[in-house]
Image (cartoon, rainbow over all chains, first blue to last red; front, side):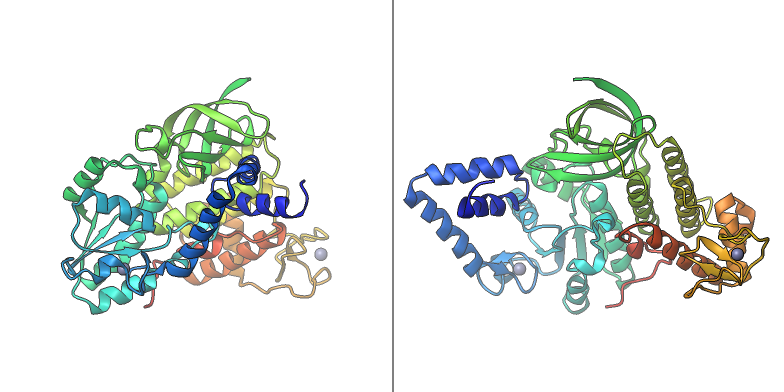
Length: 197
Length: 249
Ligand SMILES: [Zn+2]
Ligand SMILES: [Zn+2]
């Protein structure tokens, strides 16, 4: 244990995803040794991101306005909706340039063992969107692992009765992986070869 | 570092750092172990799919101080892949693996009975031979029994006097006689009690023939019994999709 503020910093860093106690300590001492202007720039970036960035009121993606850049873009196809787990998946799919529709960000996948059920995700918002806009196809692009697959199964069962076409990204994406790690070519191909469910 | 090989069921897998997963396994010979699977979230990894929840695998691990690390893994039965396409059975399996984890509190303590019970229950779930809620309740009752909390559905759980009795006491350990009855005891229907006894003993013809109403009643008692013996309730149990309900919007 270190004194006061140093320990506070280590504790805060240790709460970040993927940062264990050892890394937290390493980062904290890196910050202590760093040039003050560099550290202030980091502090400003942190403050600014929390002040300026919110979640799009339509799709749940990160946005600097009440609505995100994609939802505001009149050239995007309003009839196709791609459902993803996280904002970072939007970035991965945008890189493929394969998809011209709009998105819906769930905020995660269903994970009963972590206590995350359908009500903890933006599924209600999705159903409201489907009910009153001209969407004719929903592409389920949850992660190609079992939680993503089960979440897609749940959504397909929910959406099918409304009469909207539901498709799932084609296999070819390695099972067990994260969507964000798929290269653009593979992900693009998965879009082309999506299958109806 | 010592290397060991075992057969295991994946109980859960969560993300670690950039591309790794920490996998909790219930092994046949080494009890419950936690091991790091490196790089499995990268798309180049071919073992990612093998360390997903419910998979029955053949693993080779290096023993570590707190965490082991998986060096090789081969699939024996990809149980999870079959279950993820059926939301009701997938959530049911989640409640099973969470129970298995909670009822094997000490890592690396052999728990072969829990292991065999879990693998059998998961296979039964995949086969669809019996309704998923029945498989779940049978599993929960039996895993509690293995853990030393076998409920009594006939003779009095406290004094042993011959049944049938009318009251079910979670704290008392099952059916209790009128002398041993504790405050707060439930009065389940005789049909629900017979169903519970059938699920515990594996009398499937009786269980399969049961009515929806007694199944619901029995499930409620099993959940209460489980809750009583675990310090905190199961996270996944309330999320089990038992009757194909659709979300109301
Ligand atoms: Zn948006
Ligand atoms: Zn008694």
